[in-house]
Length: 183
Ligand SMILES: O=P(O)(O)OC[C@H]1O[C@H](OP(=O)(O)OP(=O)(O)O)[C@H](O)[C@@H]1O
Ligand code: HPA
Ligand SMILES: [Mg+2]
Image (cartoon, rainbow, N blue to C red; front, side, top):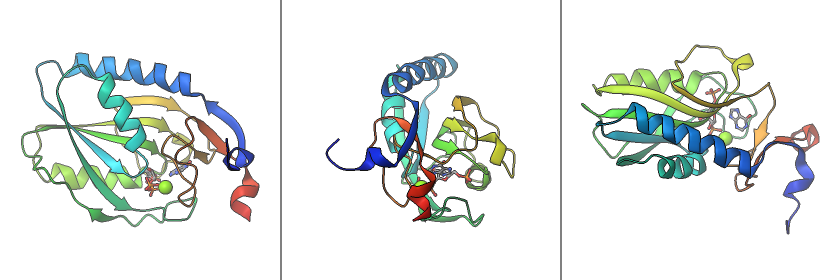
């Protein structure tokens, strides 16, 4: 790589190939479960963008896509617990089958808020699909329908996940070296 992103990576947790294989399986499961139903995928900006782009192409039926942006982490490595909507949906979700697409569920605070908020808009159904699940850090339970990988309490980066807006374009999921956020 032409810059120093790799110097801040402690280890690779999931390679590009492992991500591709798992996402293909998740797409197949979603395709089977939603047969005959139209899916509205809602990606949570910005981390979920890479995952959602690959997941949507692994689903072999029509999907509509939309995005929401909420604030929680900013430049911190743990959630403040206060969630605000920064960008709302463009679509009306009433009577739609909503599939929320996240890159990671950590404390669960972001999704807990989003589930409550979206249910009030009367969709036909809501399910959650996350690439990564970090259950050790959970503060509030959220029902996960599709989970790519369960991980220990590491701060991870890459494939959409950032630390202070860096590393999102790494093609794998890696663990950030503690020095990289200490200094
Ligand atoms: O379960 P939680 O503790 O709420 O954490 C998960 C949320 O935090 C991250 O987003 P972040 O706020 O970093 O925004 P980003 O996707 O733009 O990086 C991640 O993408 C999830 O949306
Ligand atoms: O481990 C993580 N990495 C990046 N962003 C995050 N948001 C919640 N957990 C994480
Ligand atoms: Mg982030």
